[in-house]
Length: 428
Image: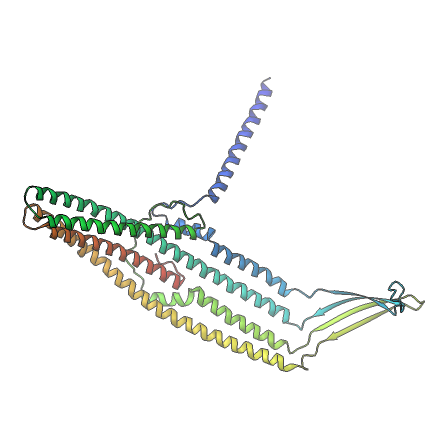
């Protein structure tokens, strides 16, 4: 009896463990298909998910996989050919009673080196598509970061406007109390109410910007547009230590567009070698067996063929000239991309360093001074040394400077993201 209990216990334990395993597996599957939660500060998580889910990246990946399948096709031999000939058929076209039946098996042979060159061209095309995939990934990551920073700016702007709205409401109540006590003027109350109305309008625009940024993020992540995304975290990066001299070699070496252009030049070079080989003939060999139906001896026959490219050599020479011109065109395009890269690199680096200086000025001087100015205006207003209009002006100035600071912070990080796309290198 105890043995049966042990057996049952083991079976029960087995099924419990099996159920737990199936549950965990299904949970992982559901987690893969579920929308991506945007936790504050998890920009790297969104980037990883975009690499897996973004339709543009998926399409570029599939194209690369398809091109890789083409390499073996280009290297392969031509298909053998089987022929069946009914010789000297009767005048009534009765093919079942010919005088002879010929069975042939033939194979075409390219001039030595042609198939190998075709395979190398396919390999270069696959390598080119790989660099195009990297370009697509960089572009998608840049778009995602831009949308992420725009969402942060809109959210931060909303919070700033709500905080200043609370301040203005306090100012308005204070002005109303003073006016009721016979101090102050109605103009101050009207001015405060006008500033509140301006804040409400600006708040509506910021909410629209936030929705637009969230919708863009959802599109990049390939999930429904109405999926809720948490507010993005404030970018921590406020300094840039990379020199222009350090970035130039990296850009020229790693930018996917430059690598892709170089691969196109290499591909044109191989295509030129292949075109030059087309002036040499291709061959075909066939072995045929003849079966006689009139008592004659059965026989074998061998056939060899080759094309004669020298007859119309002008068309092959034209092909060679065409590919040479295309190669020169691609080399000129590469030089243009290099010049454009260096120009954009210098402009971006200059803008980033300028924005970095602005951020330092805001943090270390402008914003603290504006906060002190508002506090001094509030104290002076409470003691009757100034009017509410000066307080409102100080409040508006602080609000505008706070918005300018965060706009500069976002612009700074977006420019770095653009530089990352340009150099093919992570800089944060």
